[in-house]
Length: 281
Image 1 (cartoon, rainbow, N blue to C red):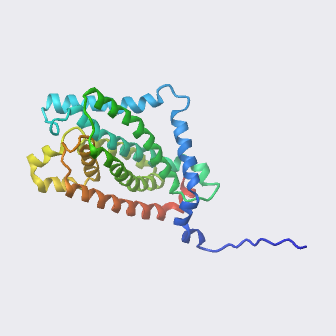
Image 2: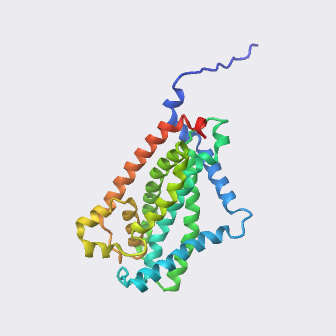
Image 3: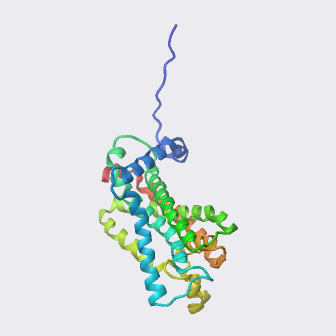
């Protein structure tokens, strides 16, 4: 009895045509890459998990002193100033960690990329997923602060996963863009920390966005909301502070639209340079 003969067909452009389907087919690789990054970050480290707690806590304390005690800026409604700041620190720290981690992800996986085929977009995606773990660890500080101040969450807290999904969307698009740029132009790695640090101070993290609207008007705030993280931060505060921080619908709409635009731009630019990654790293 003759055995069936398997036929190997090499077809030009097959990888390009099935790229988006391959992202789903290789989804288990995403889990493996993300778990590996998590293990490397926290395994055999003295302050691995503690650092994820201390960093946002220290930044919150500095901002409370500078903006509340020194500048005398008000909080949102009756919410404690520290709680208002930390409600914004959560999405910002996630965004900053996702951008920083994904920017070096391709270069850090040079050996893997040069040996086997898989959709390269899975690598920065795994870096973003790893940043979710930091977010969940930092969320423990929020719970502790709410218990400390006796601040009970309301029904709006149930909407927090929706704003977390928006934060993921806002981080993944720019993450793809800076990953491709950093892989193609190695000196770009010096620009990324500056962009992240600068973004912290131009986002409403240490102060209420209501102050900006009252002092500079709606037109200025709409222009200010071209920063996609403005809508994300306002959404987090609205959910965590049970509506004491107003949810500005135009800012939220801009955040969604700009996050989608950055995702499209990042994906297109990443795909354009992806075929040359193995040659340049």
